[in-house]
Length: 396
Image 1 (tube, helix red, strand yellow):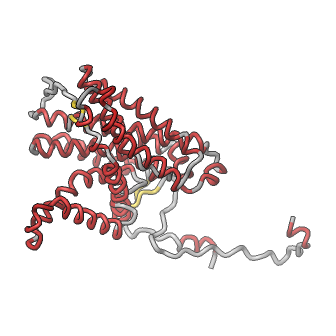
Image 2 (cartoon, rainbow, N blue to C red; image 1 turned 60 degrees about the vertical axis):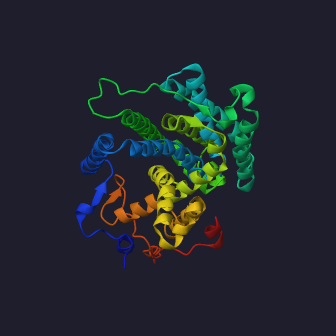
Image 3 (cartoon, rainbow, N blue to C red; image 1 turned 90 degrees about the horizontal axis):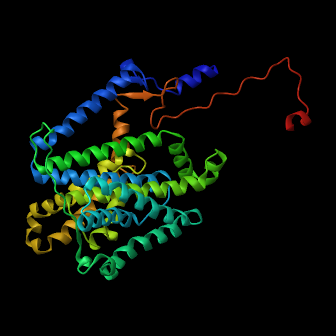
């Protein structure tokens, strides 16, 4: 059997040619455009058909998704363990609360300030990351995540005023503008604004990850030596990952203040970091879309677990401890997700979608099927007319 025959047999070709799409082709652009148009229409029409309560939960999803995107970058893509993400989230929330509540700043003006302060904090944390890795880096970020709420609870009155330990409020004058043709409430207008911010952030980050910077992050996650050999500036990329991650978390915290206009030290504690980590694992730690799926789990899974507890006849007598039991159910559901979907929901959905549509790069080859065995092509047969080589020629 010839070499070309063996290499072709190793790559299974789909039975239907319509299943194969070349990235950047007219059919591929049409499919992507259709999906984006449907998603945009659904997202815009949501505030017309759902209640204000559901709009508030969907607005929280938008804020958490932006923050989770930052955690995906630093932990899922660059491989650096960050256990202080809730502290970065709190930086943005407190910045917006102080500027809006005490100084009367509008909401949109607080977001750039929160992003700048979050990036600065990420830079301070990212510098030690050059010397630390693994468990040691996790301990440093864990100390940050636990120290910030404790400090705010005990010493915030010195610079935030009396009573700040119980929370800082942000008041916004928020009404639907006259130019908006949709008949939505104030909650619907908040949802649309947060959705637009989240879409812009995700598009910018996705564009950056397709560049050389994004490829550098993936090289670092596989090994710093491999990244250095490939020409990646490992020091700058690792610091940049922390800066971007902290900045996105701060922006997410600012967005969250538009939905829940109060922030307390308890609300940005280590438990929120654990929620971020579990949501990242469930959604898919190396996926941009995984941040959206993880945010939905953060908002909807805890109340669903509480409703599940109340719906079980044998557990209705534990209504006084429904919070504890719901946490147990929540943890069990997370274990099931991690056990059956170890790479996350989005990678599993992508593998399922490849059974129907296969997207290949321009000029590329079809990917091999999952689990299919491939054989290396046999080496070319030696030329019978060629003279035998000496040992010196072989080792030269």
